[in-house]
Each structure stands twice: as structure tokens, then as C-alpha cells.
Image 1 (spheres, rainbow, N blue to C red):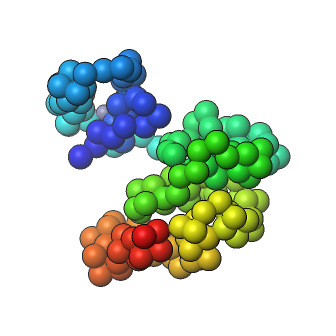
Image 2 (image 1 turned 30 degrees about the vertical axis):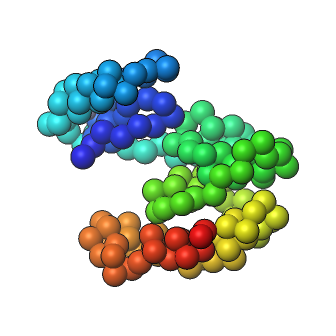
Length: 166
Ligand SMILES: [Zn+2]
């Protein structure tokens, strides 16, 4: 399955092709657009390489790069707002490994923020639990990636996240 939704666009993880969804959109219409996009992209070659932030730049430049180029989800945007502006109109925490992956990639773009994870504890109890276990979660995520998510049940990252955010 190469079709995902990235920043309100349909996105093909094989070729990097995208299609902007115009909201509001009726669910059946959205489903048919997703199906058309997925059909169009079912055989395309893996040519897309995920962009990375230029680490010679300063923190703010990298942070702004991520919001424009990264895969922005609610929980990663919560982190971004908090670290950049000490601001949080929306407090969302990662609920599953997919959410976590976006937070992980934000920290790859702005590695200086890795040392500030515990500050997120003040946002909510789930954030506190997640922040205190961030190293373990990172290790689980990297293990899953290395094994192409084939042993994800055994690694148990999803279940672990549920216990932290319940
Ligand atoms: Zn494609």
C-alpha cells in the first residue's frame, strides 16, 4: 500500500506523487478519489526519497523546514508548537507507532529538541508517560523499522503506547 495522506494531500510513497484534496469533501467522494489515486499509483517505481533537513542550519530554520516539508501530524505539531513557541492551542499526543514516527522524524530534523523531550511532561499525563519512555519508544521504533515491521507484534510498541496513554 503506497497511498497515504500527508498534510491533507493524497501522497504516493513510491514516486512522491500527490493530489490535493479540497475540503470539505463528502466521504464517498473522498473514497473514490483515494481509489482513483491508488489505482493510478499501484505500479509506480520506488523513486521517492524522503527529504532531510540541512543540519548546518540553525534550530529555527530546521523547524520551519520541517513544517513545510515534513509529514505533519497532530502530535508532532503539538511538539513543534511547544518547542518553538512555548505555545499549545492543541494538545495531542502520539497514539500509535505511526503518530510516533512523525514525532521521531521531527526530532531527526531538529535533533537539538531531543534533549527537551521531558519538558513535554507538563502538557498532559499521556505526554508525561510518553516523554519518560521516549528512549524505549525510540528503540522500539528503530527495531521495527530495521525489521520492516515484520515483528511488530512481538516488539509490542503499539500495546506499550496504549498502556502509556490510557
Ligand atoms: Zn506513485
